Amino acid sequence: FPALRTSQHPSPHTKTPSTMSTFTTHPALVAPRAVVAAKRSSFNGASVVRAGVRAAPRAARRSTAVTRAGSGFSLETSNLIETGRGIKLLTEKECAVGVAFYPDFAYNAEGGVAPGTVTNVNVDGKVAINFDCVNVSIPAIDGATADVMGLPLPPLFRAEIVPQSMVGFIEKSTGKVELEIDADVILSAKPLYTSASVRVPLTLTSETSWGATRSARGKRLDSEGRCVLVAVARVPPVSDLAVSAAMMLPSDVLVALQCRFELVVGGKQVSGK
Image (cartoon, rainbow, N blue to C red; front, side, top):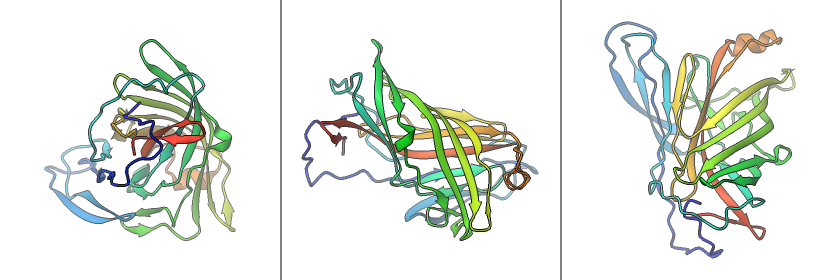
């Protein structure tokens, strides 16, 4: 597992690598010759470069890439990874959510946790994981955790994500990660309005995810168990006309998450930190 040390007393002098997220909106939708201007804005406490497009050559997908500066991928074979072993997926800051043609939301998912269990490790080092959805916790998207172009979301708006199933795998030899998630999304502007749940199936991957109008590129596990998982899903119209109109359904929904995997050994988490 990514440089997971069995010592449960890491050095106090250990430093966490610096991070940076880059979101790039590819030339899209109108006119000839694109001129891209980099703009800096506040991104949940981090400095972020956003690319603004003044003109575009031809219709194209909007592409989002989230990268983390780190020590590169170095996955070591570990006897700690075995069937029945507990494992946790933790979400961190510098994430993003995108819907239809709206600008991406800068999303702080720090504190999210998905406990799981290793269900199989095959001879090729492919580690199958099943997550306990009852105990999965994902921060809601609201004014406290998200902003659009530096501006907080409206005070009453809230989007809750409730996973119904979550399984996936890690390839020890390459660091590739893929998770299949069925989640219910509930939109609200309490106490005025609460929508019916919208089922959104996602394939979170460390590779590239493509949709009709959006794409995103992830990042494989590094030496500290960190990765960037992305997903683009097509959501069809729903019976709630207000939700369909607000989300411009059918449309692509994008998710980009900074994540960290940790093994659970003797009731304690073991990571590369």
